[in-house]
Length: 390
Image 1 (cartoon, one colour):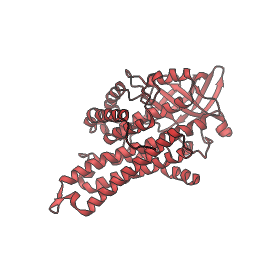
Image 2: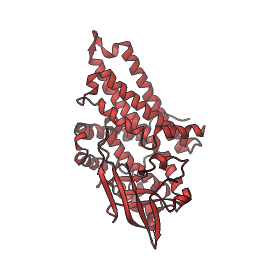
Image 3: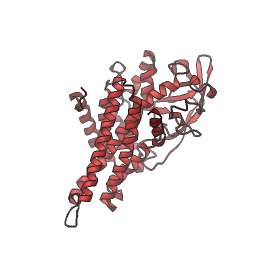
Image 4: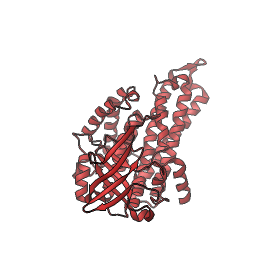
């Protein structure tokens, strides 16, 4: 029988993440918005995160990681996001980039790529390069079979040469490893698909301007340009034709992470707004004592718990290789991200003008929540996929 109780080991990781977020991240929350271009503060945060072993949390210990399972990863993500969704996204997207390597790499590749990504001395970030200017979310849509990908790979002796442009990847320009979704021939669709790893500093790899966004300033997004980028053939994960399969498995393993980041964002806003409404007196009694406000908080609490349970179910299904694991992951992503948007919006509402003020944190939770409805496949597309799978 499945238990919803976290094991003692998971609780230890959860508590470690909570202490890190409270002590190292929360004091800087008021500074990240103005630091969107230089990321000075994030550099310090990531050094401390690496020292605690967070970068290599999902990686097998024989490659320098902690070997944490999916439920542990979800517990850590929630605690990080409850304090700062952008920080959770930066660390979570490093795990996202590690996933194709874990899935498809051979032992030599795992040693070469995962060990530096698990370093406790240097915060080496991962960046998975999927979205392209012309096709947007098509690359994340399993029905498209990568037919719209324009990042082209050709063979040249013992090397592959990459040409193309990617947009909106997390950790762009500051990552140590770039996991690139590409094709040898668009007309071959999935048969030409491939995934290669490009290391920072490779000639021909360059970046566009840093994007200034509505929320999550902690996460750096930039255009990535591959201009005759050469990598050894040993940087190919799996073989040519495996790219689509590897990517879809990767997305399945990471969509529920977006759901849990959203749970954390919603919970952080909820907890702050609830405490505020306990002390804010309107009409002679605390706001939370008014039946309408109390009912709003009840609805928020139920949405947060329901979203968390959907993520846990998806994590369990992945571990058990349940036949509906991809659908459960998609559902957790859509429900969790929509719940976060509703909850954070209501938190701003119940706090009134104070909720809209940057002097209080709930407006940032609301801004951060929005992007998670969009990345890893916009919810409209993912809902179509869920519907077709019914």
